Length: 145
Image (tube, rainbow, N blue to C red; front, side, top):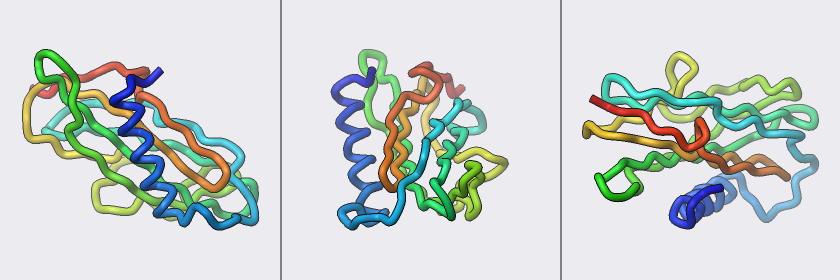
């Protein structure tokens, strides 16, 4: 379960994703399923996040992925950076367009960080008719040296 602060950040990410996708209109069909991000790692001043998969009902489905990175201050977790990316998926869950932005390399979204410390990631994915919010890797954290 996400904490209230993280739930608020996830809700903001979901809302921004919905706005990007044009929520409010009535889509002709909905995605079947979202498979959340499988994990992340920290190295070379990058938090590298594995992508989610969206399984379309048929044809291509456009999806928005919101990534929220938090950093440990020594006493509490605080929001460090957030980003939103778009992609199109087919029935089998294959990303047919690649994620928007120039940070998606080697099947990882590379989120730059400037400080050493502990980081954790939450992910919000929105596609027509379905959405998912979760901690990446169950809320575990990684350390940036």
